Image 1: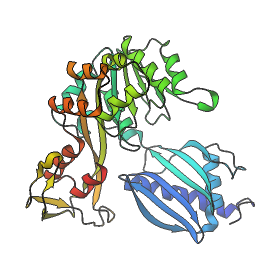
Image 2: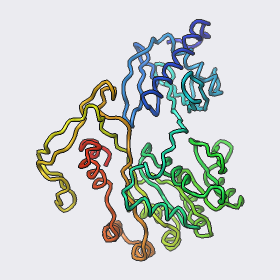
Image 3: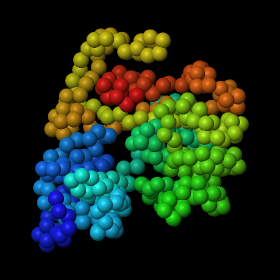
Image 4: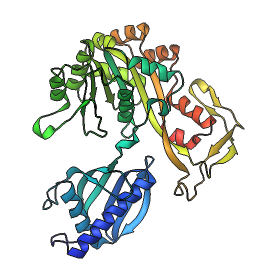
Length: 394
């Protein structure tokens, strides 16, 4: 596929229509990402809906250059550069929709440039009480968000909703009475009454340098998008000990792993013990489509650690089927699964002593930690999601 000649006027017009159609359809389906992937025989289009890739068919390969050029113009990328990855942001105003913000990324592949558009729907900010937290965890988290200092960490893999949880936490704070400063990569939701900063590593504006600068801005609350390196983690921990409430994320699998990881990042164990207020581990599971979900009897019991029976054999559960309403996926929308660990004196002593993960786990169970899988199975029993979905993400 040659991309050297400029697109004709008719191709440019087609590209405008195709891009508008792709974005409009993605928004109507609730997709988070649009993947446009040139292949040998055409351009494959896929959407990420509720965290899972859903095929959308193909568009003619001839439109690839003009479609990519259209996105590059809107996102202020270099139109002549096709051999290096690029990224940018732009907004589209489509009839019948509020302004749609998109993050664009190109990647040179074997049959042309692959294009991925992240749909940033800022109006979809979820209230804290609608995230899916257990009844007891919600008031605890609200109480912690009111603390004057300390560190709250939200952990989980990429795409598990960590940033959304931090945004929801900020929404319950008295933003008019506090100085709240964020450092993000990128800014996904704009708030009217807080200060938001976006990192720019090319210019040397990293999480670590940005966090140092924030401390000179007289903040009460600091949100750091991610603690990616030991330096950022150590500055965040120090800040949380010196009169600031710090919110951040880590790419760890569960609450206990997060405590161990913070100690492994090189900070003094007593600093971690004194600074860390709580760890919230989370996953996102798809909700069953109410139109087509079917009831069935479980044939074998679901067991957990030490063969503890979590769902008994013969229990009536629901599973996905697929219909036109849910685009044949069997699911519509997502909800969070949460595992919340609030540190008490016993856990702090273990952190200071640099105990092993097993000791942390035993102590966490004593303070009533409900593991992610068990939290998910509770949703299965309620008929909100399927057993397969919970086992997939936990």
